[in-house]
Length: 215
Image (cartoon, rainbow, N blue to C red; front, top):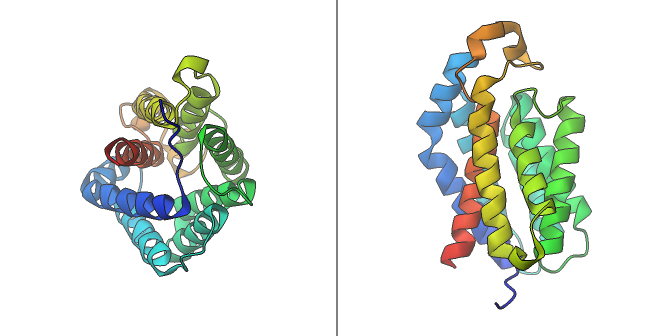
């Protein structure tokens, strides 16, 4: 199987594709947030990724992988408020710092990217897996690529595994009580409702995997 890597122009296209995917799920994400929060999570995600789309579209053609990620994180954080703006912004910027100097994203870079994202969100959100946050989906995706069997270590396979793991983990948060953030004050009222941030991350991973499969 030929090795398929993500180049800087690819990454810009992927982030635009993610923005479109998030936009399509805005109402769904708002409904999830309405059960345990303010009901505006979908709006925030759409606004953030619209800013990312505009930013990557305006970047110079010579921009590097780390530049795309760092500028995207800054754009998302600058356009949004609340915890998710900080978390996703820092995740993208942390991934950029971790991949400084990389010309493409291959399997080893994907591992670095997801590991740096997990570290960033755990630090910024003061959370751990099982706390019913976006970290649950990020951790699952990170573990999926870290434990991929050698025979399956192509970038499309690893992204597909990460996407499936994130999706399963996001849905599994419905059975958890929130231990951090405002939702932690709701007790058992959050049971039966997936965490909106975890679902959003699963949508991001699904869009990335879909783009790579189609292109």
